[in-house]
Length: 271
Image (tube, rainbow, N blue to C red; front, side, top):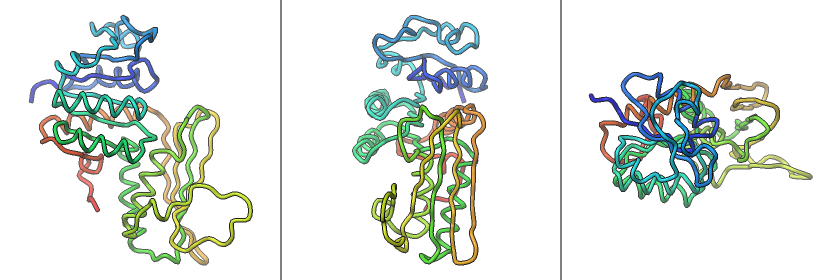
């Protein structure tokens, strides 16, 4: 297999710089493009110097289409509006589009599914091996336990995170719902305040904490009468998300157009 040519969008952001560094350090791929928004102070800079890896001879630009046309894949941890626009370009260029963006809504997923007719979309609320293994376990436990066992999902992130619940919490909620063969949209409880009354059997609750510099903590609680099972994952370094994204891109390099997840990348059972 030839070396995979990758583009990082949102190159000047915290995850963008980490992606650039990870691509530079990973065999089997190389950076050929770095995209930033119009007016960004990073425009015109060498992407390698921006990421602290040394020069890579890749200049940060705000014109993605010609860059996508010369690439095999795109790594994207930006924002929903930007991601859906990049997905349309990825479909036009017929390349791999790895999406770690969180806060996506139903309309965004519809656009991504349309793009997947021509692009190879790999999308996940979390790119880490551990979280996706956790989701697989949550699905199996939820399928085993009945609705008399309550499911609550607790997550904490740094004070700068702008969406809640986190994409990872929603990924875990979807796994729990899939295990119970119900729709998360119908059973999710995202907030409680005031006199809420007793908990409705079968609900999947979410609790959100924000503060400090926490990279990402997630716990799925299965609470029964007299006992409680807790499954947890704690991210200690954002590099793990970048490594997962690059791994996903390399996996999708020779795949057919379609919509994939990290479960596909890792060979985990799908519901």
